[in-house]
Image 1: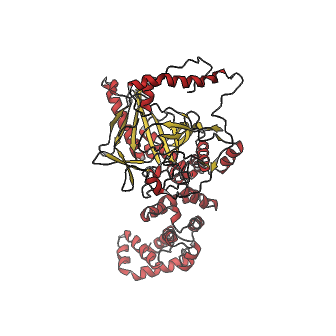
Image 2: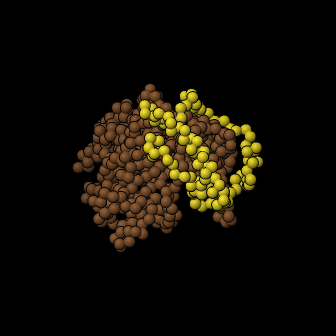
Image 3: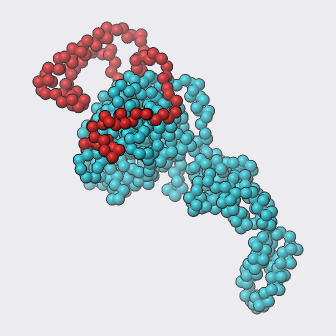
Length: 106
Length: 482
C-alpha cells in the first residue's frame, strides 16, 4: 500500500539496527548510535519535498520517464567474455558457483 | 472426511515464458544446458549493468491476461523485491508489486467425467511479470551449495488465483487448464516436470458457514497435477482431523513440503512473521505502457481457446468425454476441426480419433503431428465406409497404413482392390463355392449344428480377403442354408 504525504510529515526515527540487519551490514551498537541522527538528517533534507503543492497533481506511477518504452527485440546474443566474469567468482568449481549452504530464505 | 468443514484453496502458479532470450538481457535460455554458460553482466548482477525489457515478455503477458479474462493495466511498472539468497545475483528480484499488468479475471474449467464432471469458474486475482532466480543445488554432503545462473533472469508470469477451489481435484484441474491455455497461446510449454509450470498451493479449512478463513498453510514441491490433488486432499484431512480433535491451534501458518514417497505433507519452516521485501519502483526500467491499439491487435490474434472450443464441440452434439479429449491438445483439436470441415461426420471423426488413432499415437509414442495421416484422408475414410465402398474392418487396416506410411484412401482402395463386394449375385457365387468346398461341415449344419453358419461366413471372408459385405453375406448364406 502506498503512503500519501498529505498526512503527518513526522517520520519515525530510523531503526538503524533493523536497517543494518535487512541490508546484511554488520555494525556495532556504538555505530548504531552514531548513524541514527546522521541518517535522520539525510531523510529530513529530503523533507523539503513536503513544501510542494500536490493539490492538483495526480499521483504518478513512478518518476517521469524521459523517453518511451526502451524495449529490446527477442533476439539471442551470447555474451563474449564469460571467462572474465567467472574469474571474478571467489569459488568457481566444476562449472558451479560454490556458496555456503543457506537453507532459509530471508 | 470433510464433514462439517469446508476447504478453501488458492493457487500461485509461475509460468516460465518460452521467449528466445531472458527478460532483461539477450542471453538465450536452453533447458539442460551446461551450467553457467548462458550468462552476462546483466543477469549475473554485475555492478553497473542495466536491465532492458524483452518486448516479447509484454506481448506474452498481455496474451495471458486476455485469455484469463482480466482487466489490463494500460500503465504498470516494475518493482524491486529485495532479499538475500545465493541464487539471486542482484540481491533483489525485478517483479511487479502493487500495479500488476493484469488483474480481476477468471478461468473456466470442466472437471473430468471420471471425477463427476461439472463446470467451474475460478477467479484470477492477478497476473504479473517477473524474472526467475538461478538454480541452487544443495550438496548432499558438506557445508556448501552450488549455483547455476543459466536460469537467472528468465521471464516468468506469476498467476494468482482467488481462493475459489474447494477440493484437490478442482485445484488440479485449474492447474491443468492453465497448462492448456499457455500451450494454446504458445507462450510456454507449461511442463511441470521441467519446471516451466510451478504450482504452490494454499490450503485452509473452516467450519461450514463460517465467513472467516482458517489458518492458511502453503504447500510446495508439487511436481505433477496428481500430486497437487493428493497433497491438497492430505492437507485437508490433516487440518480437519486437528479441528475435530479440538487441536485447531496446532495448525500454524507455515510452508509444508509434499513428500511424494511418504504421500504426506511435512513442516518445512514456520513462517516467522511476514517477510519484508522493501518493495520500491525499479528505477532502471521505465513504466510499461500499453495502447488500446496494441491490446486490440493481440486480442485479434488470439487462437480459439480451450473453453470456447469445448463449448463449440458440445454444440456439435459430442458428449463430455469426447469434448474433453479433443480439446485437450490444440494440435488434436486442429486435426479434428480440419477433418469435419470437409464435411465428415462429427461422431465418426471423434470415434476414430479417440479410438484407433489415439491408440496408435500411444503405442508409437508419437504426437498427432508425427503421423502421416492427414485430416482430409480421415474424412475420405469415413465417407468411404459410410457409402459402403469399404467395410469398417478394411477401414481399420487402411487407417494403419495411412498413419504409418501416408497415401490416400482412394489410392489404397484401388491398389489393393479393397472395394467391398455388395453385388448379391457375386456373393451368391462365393457362398455356393464355400458350401461346395465344405461338404462335411454342411452335413453337420443340416443335422443341427447351426453355429457353423459362422464358419461358412468366415471362409467366405477369407476367400474375398474381407471384402464381402458382412450383412449381405449372412443374409444370402442363411437363405442358401435353409
